Length: 385
Image (cartoon, rainbow, N blue to C red; front, top):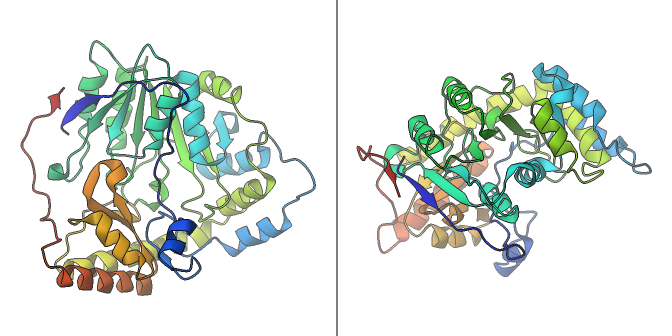
C-alpha cells in the first residue's frame, strides 16, 4: 500500500452522484443496443437469477398495506441463518442507505474518515454529504492490490486519528480480502474509532471469513442481499451492529424505506439455502474456466476472491465502448482511479466465452498494443503525504 492522501471537504449542496456499475438505458440507446439482449458484465450479481421461491414470494407480497417498518420477519430469518441476535440487525434499502446512515450518524467536520482504497465510491460521497473530510490508504497494482493492515494501523494511530474507517472486504473492485484475525486485531487496538466493514461480496468468496459473529462496540458489519441473491431491482441489505450504534442509526432511518416486496424476497432468499449454495458452486466453476480461457489468450486477469475480477488493459474506456457496440457491457475503472483496468463479472459459461472472443478480436485488431503487462511485486515502502 502506498499512501495516506487527503481531500478537502466539499460544501454542502454541491455533490455529484457516484459512478456505479449496471446498465444505463440511455447509454445503450445511444449505441443502438437493446437492453433485453445485452450481456451485463458490469454488475456484480449472481448470474443465474433469483431462486424460484423468491419469485413466488414477490408475486404474493401484499401491496395494499404498509410494510413492516422494522422488518421483523426478515430480521428473524437473518438471525436464524447466521446465528446472530435479531436486535443487533438493522435492515436497509440496500447497503447504500446503510452507508449513508452510518455517515450521517458518525461523520463530523472535526475528525476525518479513512477509506481503504481503491474501493466503492459511495463511502467517499456519503462522507462528503455528511460534511466530513476523507483520507485514503490505497493499495497498489504493483502489489496485486493486497491490503497491508500495518499501513492502516499506522494511519489510524497517527496524531489525527480518523473517526470512521471504511473497509470493503472482499473489496470492490479489486476482489482482495483482509484476514479476519488481522481485522479483529485492528478493531481491538482502536476502540475509539468506528470500523465499518462492508461484506457485500462475501458470499461470492471462497476464502474470506465474515465478521458477523464478531462483537465489538466499535464495529459495524454491512451485508448486501441484492447481489448474492440476484434481487438488485428490489434493493435490500442489512447491518449488524452493537446496541449503542444500533440505537443511533435506527433513529435516523426513513420510515418504511424497505418495501414489502423486498422484505418478502429477502425472507425467501435467506431460507432457500440449497438453491443459492448450488448456484454459487456453479459460479465458481464458471469463474475458473473464464480465467483459464482469458489466460490462454495471453490476457492477464488479476486474482480475485469474488465473482468479479480486474483485467489490465490500455484504453479501458475505449474498449468498453467498443464492447457495448457488440452487445456486452463491462465496467471501466476510471471512477476508482484505475484508468488501465476493466472490472468484469462472471456470467454463465457461454456468455463468458463470447466476451473472451470479443476481447481477443479487439486487442488483436488494435494498431497499438492494448494489453498492460501483469503487475509485478513492488518493494516500495508506504508513503504518507
